[in-house]
Amino acid sequence: MNAKVWLVGAGPGDPELLTLKAVRALKEADVVLIDDLVNGAILEHCPEARIVAVGKRGGCRSTPQAFIHRLMLRYARQGKCVVRLKGGDPCIFGRGGEEAQWLRERGVEVELVNGITAGLAGATQCDIPLTLRGVARGVTLVTAHTQDGSSLNWQALAQGGTTLVIYMGVAKLSEIREQLLAGGMAADTPVAMIENASLPHQRECRSDLTGMEEDAYAFELKSPAILVIGAVAAREENLKIAAFGSSYRLNAEFV
Ligand code: SAH
Image (cartoon, rainbow, N blue to C red; front, side):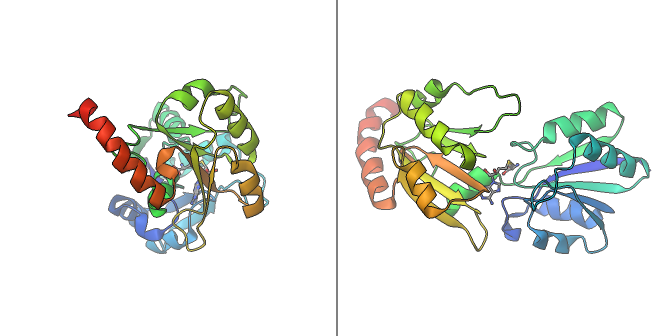
């Protein structure tokens, strides 16, 4: 039997946001390696499979990446159908690319299955249209957390004119705020902070660039959360005015 590993996105949490393809892979799975941001309810699709938790939260020490690699390889070489189930999309801050490459270099067939990434889900669940016509012409996904300590080009982000969706930002609010202000982003730029997107305990905190750190503190914002920064994160009533106003301005440019 050919060794195969499915790298599957489990979406942001709501089990109904899983793709049909993800469900099919789970139904076929003999072994499921599951990350900690994955909603356990999703495992109803693989009642017979062996479940191996390789998460990094819940007080456990993180499972070293090399160990996860070897585990997938071992099961695949035993001829088992392996599903590596990751939160959101496997290739958005999810190491899907490196895991696929590592396995393929060892002759293992890999199939990637999209999931809905938390940033997109969180925004939509809060009625934030990330690329609202006339307001934002693009969206940029960034992580505030880097392993090598390298820094982002904050000035480009501040002035790029796209909506920013920031992952892993809860512990970096102060830096994000300071760098975007220093980079020239307007102090009253709307900010939405969305915790546990798509889950029953989802919470959202609306603020602006100046107030985001203080407001998040008062709100007791906790990880996992995403930040949406840009005009589209304004409260609905302000957004309508913004969209209406700027669609007039932009008509000449677009049409
Ligand atoms: N591959 C994942 C991202 C993993 S990085 C994806 O595509 O969504 C982990 C970060 O994702 C968290 O720190 C948080 O910023 C974000 N995240 C994941 N699930 C989330 C959720 N349900 N609500 C809000 N943010 C979430």
